[in-house]
Length: 310
Image 1 (cartoon, rainbow, N blue to C red):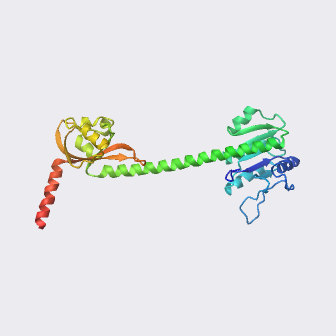
Image 2: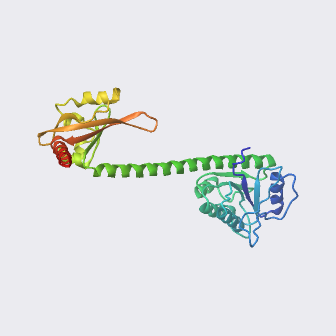
Image 3: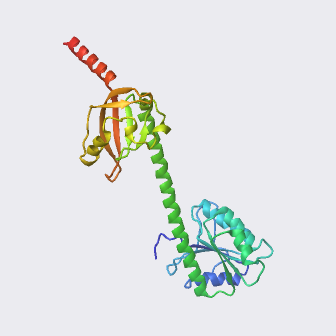
């Protein structure tokens, strides 16, 4: 079996003979030991559980509910959680099995619980309501095959759940990083003086930065998902987008006529390129707009400075 599977099993029962049966079931070639296999030396912090070459299970036992709860608490401290707990329902003089299971679940929601009983102290509905999930009611006497099969199933399911939890956490962390990167990129684009316009390949506006809002006079809400023809009504921008998308054209400083919300026309220079995802698939089109008047003034200033230096 997969060595990565958590095969840690906890057995809580006040009948020491039954504890011996569990030990013999999980470790048939090992002599019985004391009722509790969880030994903590004063200088040690790791759990000492019974392991044999003949068994993949690591078994710990307790004869009272409070003792079992403490074993779970210490197993979590040592990052060695139990996958499944077999819990007897009647364990005088201490707390009963249901209360034990509830306290264990408060410590560790991941653990699978098998309530083992020969009595009807609690109904199935009561047990299910108290523990909510991953609980099984088993009637005594259990055969060794039943014990082993239930333990295997619980350990395998625990590992499957843990893998899903880890994957979910990784996805959450990656999503958080992507959201952070997206925010940083958006903040950078928003701060630059050029107009940045992002649209779909079919010309639906997805984003415009602050400089663009100032130039066109529309709010982001007014522009969201609108066709780019709204601000380029006479410039045939759709044709330019087709060339960018289908021919991988990367235009630089192409003159186009932009119309703002007041109906005023303004000549702008348009540069563009395709935005692709990590797989290289085209997703959006990036357009950078420069005001012709500002661009011309800047160009003339640069030329004058160059002539002056000469």
